[in-house]
Length: 96
Ligand code: HEC
Image (cartoon, rainbow, N blue to C red):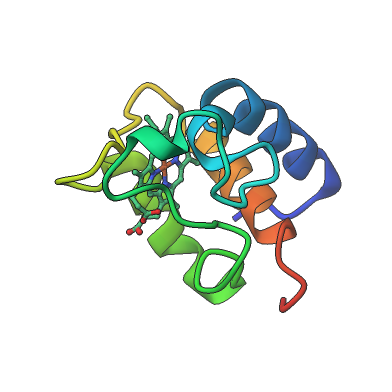
């Protein structure tokens, strides 16, 4: 797992490019497109997503997507990029 500052910074860049439109720039669930989705993207800035112990779950949610929602799978992101996103999402919480 990656937890360095470099990983978080890389993750922030990936998040802004691929995720913020739905999840909001800070992952708070307030993305521009949020109101058109059922279910809407929830905040990622809260547990379990911000818990380091749940990093594997976050990784798989990104890799596999969430069936029945607008959350697509992201097989095009490398393992490294996906862990960078996990590191960024972890950094959104104050509960670590
Ligand atoms: C097209 C809109 C959209 C995009 C783009 C998107 N998501 Fe999601 N995401 C959703 C929705 C809708 C859900 C389902 C509701 C929820 O759990 O928040 C979701 C769920 C999640 C979850 C929680 C999974 C669960 O089991 O509840 C994570 C983690 C997540 N997204 C991360 C990301 C990351 C990281 C990216 C960028 C690579 C991303 N999402 C891109 C819409 C989106």
